[in-house]
Image (cartoon, rainbow, N blue to C red; front, top):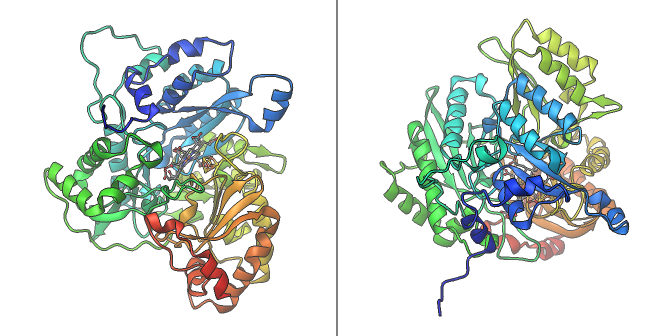
Length: 574
Ligand code: SRM
Ligand code: SF4
C-alpha cells in the first residue's frame, strides 16, 4: 500500500481541468441555475471570479424555498495599481450595467465588481478585456496582482520599480489558452501540440502566491505580509536593486494553531535586472516544495517555516545564474498613505484621496462615484489604486489642476484634514454580505466603530496622531490585521478578537489582547488604553510600541508562536 500522503481535492480538480477549462464553458450556458458546479467554482477563481451569494437574503430565500441569491465577484488585475481615466470610466460603467453599482478598491490595488449574475459574467469579463485590463490570475493558485508603491512619478526610481512590477506580473501570468477560449470566444485550437505552462506546470501552485515591491521609506505594500517581496534599494539617487524577502502571510483559522500569520524574512539582495528571474525561481521552489496535501498548510510561508529561510536561500541560489548578495540596509517609516496634494519635480500634481473601505459608491450626502466619474472625464493623468484601498488622482497637469479641484469641491469629496488620523489609517475587508467566509461585519461596521473611537481620540487630543487600525470579518486577514497597531478580527456575529501591538511600519506582528469582545464593548475596552497612551507616551512613541512597553501585550513573536499570545500575563500585569 502506498504511503504517499493524499493530495488535496483541489489538486485533482486542477490536474483534471485541462489547463483550467473544466466544464466552465458548458456551465455558463445553463441558465436554469445561477450557480456553477462545485469544481468549476474552484476553476473560475483562476479566471478571476468567485461565486458568491447575498448573505443578507439567505434566510428569506430559504424560507421561500428559493435558490440562494447567487452572483459573481469579478477581480480585475491592475499591476502596480495604475489605471487610465478611460479604464476608470469603463469600470464605472460596468459597475452600474452589470454589478451592484459600486466599485471596490482592494487591499492589493485591484478593482472588484460585486453582484454580477451568471448571465452577465461572460459579457462583463469580455468587456473588461476590451479596456486592456484582465482578470486572469487575479485569484487562484497562481501569482496574484503584483503590488507596487503607487507613486511612480515622484521619482525615476518609482517608474523603474513600476516597470519591474509589470515585468514580473507578465512573466508569471498563466499561459493557458483557456481564458481566451472561454471568455473572449477565442477559437479552440485543435492541435496535437501539447499545451504547456512553462513556469507553473499542469497543477499550478499549491496555493495562491503574492508578490510586492516597496520603495522605502514607505511600506504601503506591506512587504512582510507577502510571499515574496522586493524592497528597492536606492543608492546615490539610482535604483541599485532589491532586497528580497520571503515567507510572509496573514491567513490563520480560529482554534487551529497549525495556521498562523508570519512576517517575511529578508534573505538577500539582487540587482534590478535579476528581479524577474528571482521571482520565477522562488515561485518554482514553492511549486516543487509547497504542501499539496493540506491547503491549510500550503502557503509559501509554511514552506519557508518548515525548511527555514537559510534552506530557501541555499536552494534559490542553486537555481539562479548569480547567487543573491547580502541584504543592504533600508528603513521603513510607515505603511499608510500620504494624503492630499503632492507636487513632483516635473510640475505634475498627485491627489491622494481616502476611500472608506475602498468602496466607491454614491450616497445621498457623498456622491463619490459620480464625482470620480466626472473627474475621469477631464483627467489628463492617471489613477493609482493604493494598497490601503485608497485612490490617487495622479499626474495632474498644472493647467488641469483647477478643474480637478473644482470637481472635488462640487462633489463634496473631502480632503484628509476633515478626517481623524485614526480613520485615515484604517482598513476593513469586504466581509458581509458578499464574502462567504465572513463570521462578522467589517466594511459595513468599521466606519461606525471609528466614529465611536473618534470621541475617545478627540477627548485625548489625538486627532492628528496616526494609529493603524484594521478590521476583518474572519481570521483570513484580507485587510492585513495582524500587523496593525489595533486590529479586530471577526469571531462570530457582533464579536471580535482584539489585537494590539503591531508595528506602525508593518514590521511587527500584533498580539491577541482580548478574545470574543462584543462590538458594544469595543470602545470601552480601548478607551483606557488610548487615554493611557495620550498621558504617558514618550516623545514620538507609536501606539503599537506603547502597548508593548506598557504591558498591554507582550513583545510579539513570529510564526508558529503567534498563538502563544500571552493575554493571561497581560491581564495579570494590570
Ligand atoms: Fe482575501 C479569501 C477579499 C486581500 C487572505 N479574500 C478572500 C475571498 C475571496 C473569500 C473567498 O475565498 O470566498 C474574499 C472575497 C470577499 C468579497 O466579497 O469581495 C477576499 N482579499 C479580499 C479583498 C477584496 C479584501 C479587501 O477588502 O480589499 C482583497 C483582494 C485583494 C486582491 O485584489 O487580490 C483581499 N486576502 C487579501 C490579503 C491582503 C493581501 O494580499 O495583501 C490577504 C492576507 C495576505 C495573505 O494572503 O496571507 C488575504 N483572502 C485571504 C485568505 C487567507 C489565505 C490563507 O493563507 O489562509 C482567504 C481564504 C483562502 O484563501 O482560503 C481569502
Ligand atoms: Fe472575507 Fe475573511 Fe477576507 Fe474579510 S478577511 S474578506 S471576511 S475572507
